[in-house]
Length: 352
Image (cartoon, rainbow, N blue to C red):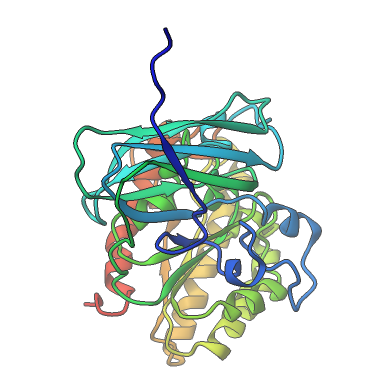
């Protein structure tokens, strides 16, 4: 005789009391997408396509359900050779408030699956808990249903510290390549340390600092800070010279009092043995540092720079990557550890 299955009530996470974050245009378009369906500016085709990847998306709530289930319909199968399906197209869950949340489970299908369902979480006791579920990093989500045990309480999550969003623009590394599960992308790690909504606008190979993207970022309501981390996609020093000053100007034109943090590129394996690549890397870093220094001399006191060469560790940074470029979970944790004190200095209400 088969065991009796529990009665489950299915919910749409895009409706209250759930709080959906990481999708600034969700209320307008009602899709899990990081950019609007009909932007006011023409976007590069790869950026528009990658915007369907749900990196940085989260749903938060409180419940005393002892089990949580998901039904998932993806935009396509997993197919990356250097990133597991759990990170590319899976969900993971943390339990506890910001600053105390702990990882408790992952749900994903096989790499070929475009649909899957199952139990994401099981914890003993009908205790009211804060739940954070992280969306996939490198795949789109067409449909998502969240199941709780019948009779379970369902309440809104605790409020954010402020209404502002921390908007992070960058590359495949920003998007989360190649974390083993969504919660290990560095923006998601930071979201467990700072009680703000994080918007992940990392675009694999395509975060190139186009002015159209700066205009679009500036349209997102209530920015608390901008993090610009796109050197690796900028097509060298020439690309940075062409795009970064204008990108900052367009953001600053609309948001004169919002902190802007420029982060130079992480170290990557090639600079350890290719002298020309290393010189280009250092010149690009130094250009960003000098640009920020110049802006600060001109009165832009809320523009900051951080040297990305320090973020993977000083002695053995190469041990924190999958392929010499993209971080492992260890690499992402080191990135978050390095950026945490920087954000504490620049965020409103935490500046020292």
